[in-house]
Image (cartoon, rainbow, N blue to C red; front, side, top):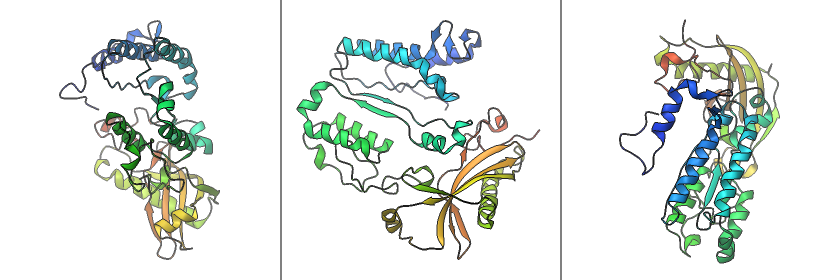
Length: 338
């Protein structure tokens, strides 16, 4: 968050964008445009100029445009024309003929009314990831191309993209033989097993989309018991900043479901015990009306429970936690005392 002590790249536009953020007078149209130019378009123009400059040299470019869709995912439509122009220009000038182009997002929408739906919960966990290879690649490397296409229907993670980029750096005909399937990351040039589980891929159950959900009765004693546990877990996280942040209390249980894990996953976890289950709980706390969502493992025999992954904050907190602005991990939990 504080930047770098030394330059991390040969071309570095942080200074320009920091200046834009500080000079509020240049922003127009709900903070999407710099004067008469869409900020996302400016980012893409910068990348296009960089690619043109480096076209005869090996290069790696990493660029992010987040302002447009961070708070309102319907704003994605404004990127259609700039993105079309960007990719069209590079394609027509054959600047992608020796290049792997990756278009991706880090996560889906995290706040708002849509996030409160089941589809919104899935959307948050399933960011887009497009890999675009030159046409000649498919002809020259049919096996790699086949695996890339097959893997669009398999469980993949950013760790797999990392391994894929490592293979691009050290590209040869022996890629298929390098990794086993139990590795946390598997290059997409290799076939990812159909039976791969979230546990195999290092995905916490809270973020796993390879499970089912059965709606639970929010009046059930177990759901109340787990909701109280969730509030206590939040206050434990805040324990060393409670002189600045409010202690939270349960205001309302908004939703609860039982997470249905498939048999192969249960076997790999060695937990085929009827008294054990995973629950996804959504609550509202007071003061502040914060909405939190968490996945909790519960063993009814021993009344044992634990969080399985992170606690999600699913409504905006804006500057509610400005009193601990240096503590990025706790920002989404804290409501500053008056």
